[in-house]
Length: 143
Image (tube, rainbow, N blue to C red):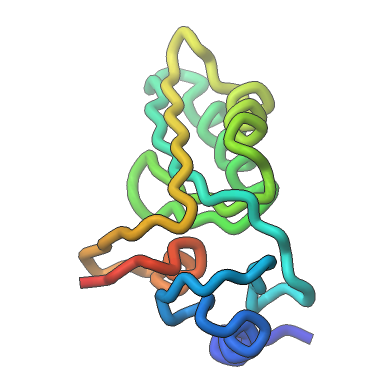
């Protein structure tokens, strides 16, 4: 049985009040995803910025990085060369997996990963994925 997003959000608010959808940082030991059946422990939310050299194997390297970014958590990647990823991995483990299990090349490509867990932020513009952004960054203020 799949939940609509609104039904899922209501279920998530019940499971973790003050944490999902309202921007408050109430402390829950686990975060509830509206489309998953059980709470999931989240170690961190990481901002990932990257620049891949445009050449004949750009698509292959880009696709391999996207595969690794999506592998173990929720991802928001609406802006260019940037993603927010929620995962149960440590910063070191996450960065290591992205770099060494994708096809990035240290002679061509750049990768920058920063821990932004539970940090305030501001978003402006007509976002297509505002609920995903809000679920990963509960303190986001959209102006």
